[in-house]
Length: 106
Image (cartoon, rainbow, N blue to C red; front, top):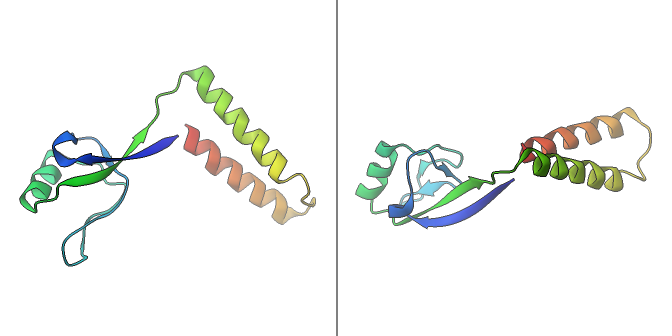
């Protein structure tokens, strides 16, 4: 699972991942969401007087917690798809959603 936090730039360290795009005063994208910040990124943002950024943080889960979350995902999807038909499109959609959601837990 990931969570999003807004941090003052002086609290951000290299290796953290942006949770939202950073734009300049004219709306141009300086750095895209998902960028792993380096020291040079942080120095550039300081020069541009960026004061805070949105950071994506992944939770640290034990193996047992991760498996419990994965089972919750499976149970939720089974519940959501309980009235769907047996068609190929239904199976493909279910499998695609399942893979995506399980990947978010990893």
